[in-house]
Length: 288
Image 1 (cartoon, rainbow, N blue to C red):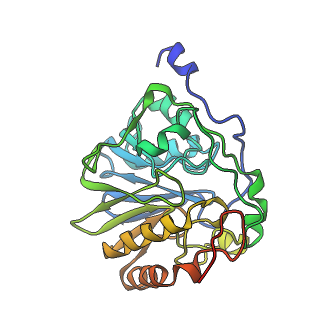
Image 2: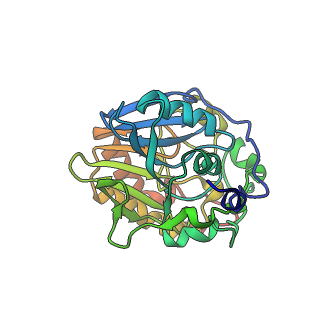
């Protein structure tokens, strides 16, 4: 990468290491031969491609300061000289783009996100601040310290194709699943009903510190402290439930499959106001 272009990309001004972890940190799970979910501290990313084939696609980019760990994982799985065809973002919250600038500098590959997510990746717009007043546990109370300012990726970031295709992943389609963020997307592969859901729904109560530390399984709505539009979030969950996925990797919590996934996602879609929407908080809506 030339020096001028490298100087144009950087993290948000409030980016910093977050001292939070879980029992899953540094571990990976192979859901299919070509789908590998890996956890950095308290968030998941996904590497899609066959092991040892040098080329793959990375979905999301971990916590702040996680680039070295991500690079080590990809070199171990795909080969010492491996590099992705592209990096796809479900959204641009700090815990999904935490290693992104360093990964671009190392790999020099394009990044793709929904058009409505681009302002948070080009320095134009900050996310709404996290809401530490929201109903929830200790992690929600600590969310005031979470970064929310935009990255500046310059010419490295692009809009996902309008036709629903995913660069580098011909078998996957992307779908717009807003609510947690305006441009949140999820990825789905019809042939094995594999879903990469980002934070449209998750499999742990992300606002509760004990659940995060232990990774206690619970199909839940998006993180309460960072979700401003609960009506859109509910519609997104219903859209994903209608796919009847067989496997799901979410942004937080363990991968889930089979009846546990379908039953849990159905219950969440049917009882979203009760199970997901907080009773109080800056972005909470009246609950019926």
